Length: 282
Image 1 (cartoon, rainbow, N blue to C red):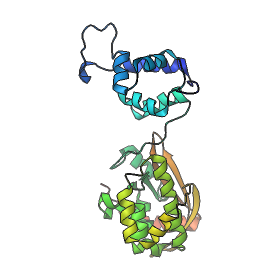
Image 2 (cartoon, rainbow, N blue to C red; image 1 turned 45 degrees about the vertical axis):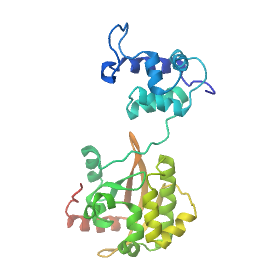
Image 3 (cartoon, one colour; image 1 turned 90 degrees about the vertical axis):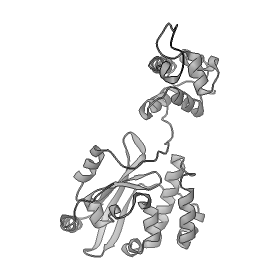
Image 4 (cartoon, rainbow, N blue to C red; image 1 turned 180 degrees about the vertical axis):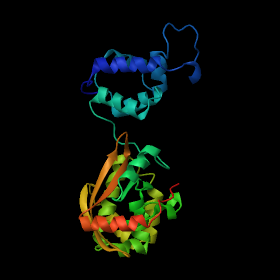
């Protein structure tokens, strides 16, 4: 431990409360002869693989600040949700934990409705490893309908480097592709998902010499904001103001919105979207 606990009194109270909420019997622990509900301090310490004295000091607000690794162990021992884990870090270290990658197959109906309401702005949700898990009708019409692909193939980099249609849609494909690789590398590292993308990176390096060369450059870029120009085969040139936002409560997910740069661009999207059925997402 080093430094000081950000909020020692609040941290101790929070740990005691979470400890009291656990059912010993459900965790295979004896439930008889307990003076208070929940787990004992030494039981939490054992589950977290730390010394009972150290855990006791944390509940009492003594000693230095715990490391992020120790807080992670305690969060698992107390079976905290992601929101509760974040609160633990804020109390213990004064900062939220780093993004932790989680595999995801879809989004909640509420989040999908948000995407749908953004029409005529193309919008999609992608994971930290740039798998696309949700999109709206405008995105399917103007960019690509990921519903045409099996879920395991719905990755932005796969399409950028392996789909000739993606290359043809870019006015400066090399620049756009380099940006995608650099931003992808930053997101993967931030999410601690390097191992999860190993197979994808190896595959792309084998199938695309362009990707292999760009990956070797080790460039890093923040997704941020930019203006994106594409050439659509039906309506011609379209300009978008590109923005990416973290999804509240799920920092490993990003909502990407392509706002039409001009009223004329918006009109083109509306006309094309009206002729496009809502994408079938699964």
